Length: 103
Image (cartoon, rainbow, N blue to C red):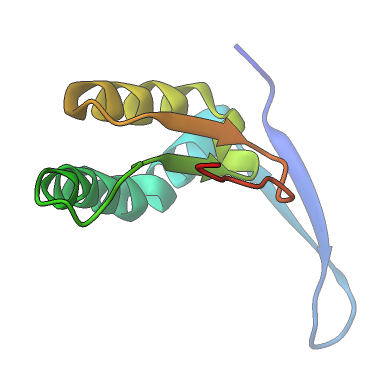
């Protein structure tokens, strides 16, 4: 079991230090709560993308997951499974200077 993490912040009101100690479980719980809505949105929107493809509104569908979230193994697994279920390609990147082209 990992030791709790202690974070020290300066209070904006008076500049005095403030400590917060978090367990690994606290951090994981906060991470899961923070991603709940975006993952729910992806679950709803990826099938819509498939419909748009079938109706001819989209030529080359692609889901891009970027930033630090793209490195999280749990997020990768969920998003990869969702895209594979729907036959949509997916890219994970923390490089914000990518160019996607159909040329």
